Length: 189
Image: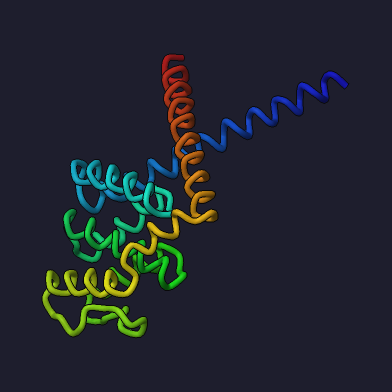
């Protein structure tokens, strides 16, 4: 029976360890995607912005990073991506769609000839230049759903989501520690 308890404890510890390293890996992947689209310096800035945006929404920073990489892949620069990301979290909350879907709608609207947001009552309003499309999308979403993500983050379910995000950040930090510790010990042998 002692062997069974030891085996159970080892399984539980190993599961926690793996979960934390996986959380760090997901965060690391999201920053890598940002770097692939924007370059290293901009990726660091956008990653910091995603952490700030996480505090005023129900979305995790790694999900925000992935959405920003998607928007950037359609041609938005760092500054434009920050403007569009605030609109994207509000759009996601207003339309009750996941963040990735909202980001894809925004990206397609600013990065192609199709205004993917028109059918939702927001969009680029016939703009043809990218900067004009971006300004129209931001203004249109702000007019219809301005600060909705922040307001929803202040509800009971929003506070629970933020607590979950904070715990996720803790797991990422622990996972980073374990990953680095394991890498250092493994590489020295």
